[in-house]
Length: 125
Image 1 (cartoon, rainbow, N blue to C red):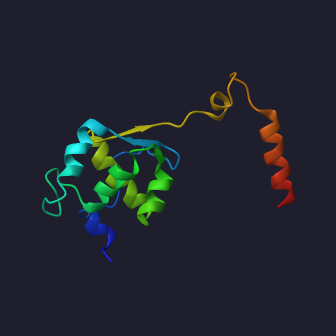
Image 2 (cartoon, rainbow, N blue to C red; image 1 turned 180 degrees about the vertical axis):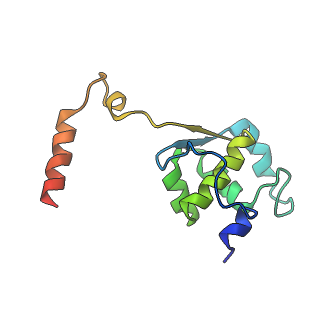
């Protein structure tokens, strides 16, 4: 097992404080493809990437939340955020806030049926 401080090169806190558990991440394909194609490069790779960075780029080819990425890597969220910050700084990964529930429901309003179902489900617990 590799210790988290080894993966992050001794860093203990992310440089970015705007990454939440539900921040959506997506790989910038045209920039990341050459980096991912260079699998034969030494461990840190041509861009100073760890194997975990490469796994993140592969995982985020389809948009994924910070929490999903951390779970997929089986790393603490704090360590994952440091790695994500590296990729965002290099322009290999994009981060954006999730679409609000109200906008996702369509029509611009809240889906009261969904909210009622959630409330009733919580009451049954």
